[in-house]
Amino acid sequence: MSNYCVILAGGSSTSFWPISREDRPKELVRSESTGKSFLMQTYNRMLGLFPAENIYIATLYRLKELIMEQLPQLGEEQLILEPYSRNTAPAIAFSTYKILAKDPDAVIVTAPTDQQIRNSEAFGEAIGKAIDYVSKYDVLLALGIVPTSPDTHFGYVQVEGGRDAYKAGVPIKARTFTEKPSAELARVFIESGEFLWNSGIFVGKASKIHEEMQVCCPEITMPWKGWQNYMGTPQESSFVERVYTDSPKISIDYAVLEKSGRLWVLPSLFDWSDVGDFNSLYENSPHKDGDGNLLSIAGKSLLKDVDSSIIWTNRPRKLTVVRGLKDFLVVDSDDVLYICPRDERILQDTQSELAAPDFDDYR
Image 1 (spheres, rainbow, N blue to C red):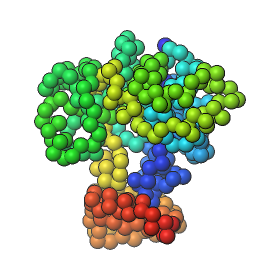
Image 2: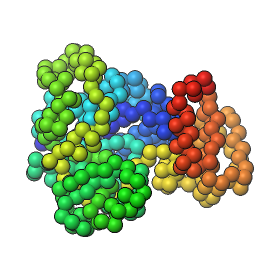
Image 3: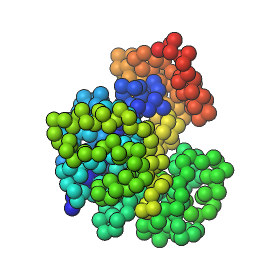
């Protein structure tokens, strides 16, 4: 039995607009301060836990060149190329069939890219425990994070056993899922002592993932009928194209994990955060300067009286001068200058306005 990791990197998120765009989603945007993207950080994290040849990237076909540019050590056979973006459930189905065709006894760990994870030793221990558990039992296992606050940005999973049952630190059966609750409900969850944050990382035998998807989301698996005859053949691309044309857009959380009677959760203690927007990027970045600023500046800069702000520019030949800002976001890209208070409500309203049809006049 071999262990595989599938990194999910096929998103088209514009939550980091104008840094992230349709042709360069946020997981592929490199920070000037680290030189690495979320994808590169995730790959490096997994490289210490899996053989290099067993790490796969599930992404869109149109992002292939960007992926290979950032991870040139990958073989093309390690790219699982989707023709269209259909969210995580179809991506995981495709990845599962691809790996099953190679190794019927495989164990698969699927992981998003848009996360900040510290405590790499604790993370490695959690992955090891999860793989060991699913190797022995016919379950799917999600990594649950012990919550530190009633955060409304994360999904929550309730576990069985009553208050603080998860503190035993062993896998425990899942009971319910709630995606991004209200602040009031999140407080109730925390106070109950029965809920963990859903990390988005889950583990299972490839054969069991296949079986459970057939039970929970046949609308996704039915079009894949006969996949064994196509994986690894010259007809694979055309077959996948046909499957994806009619595939629903749905996350693995809604398609499988919410419905599955086989889902268990491993309480985990590594330092984790989902990075869904600029504020979560700021709050969870370890790379702030002495004034609490998160900086990614390609060229020279002159900052004065700037506090708790994000300054991001990809213009290496341009001097960036900022003075007298506190709690602001400043982004200077090739075609957009974006200046906005670093207030969550304002940022969300701005993203909604950018998605409105009449904004096309400015594009």
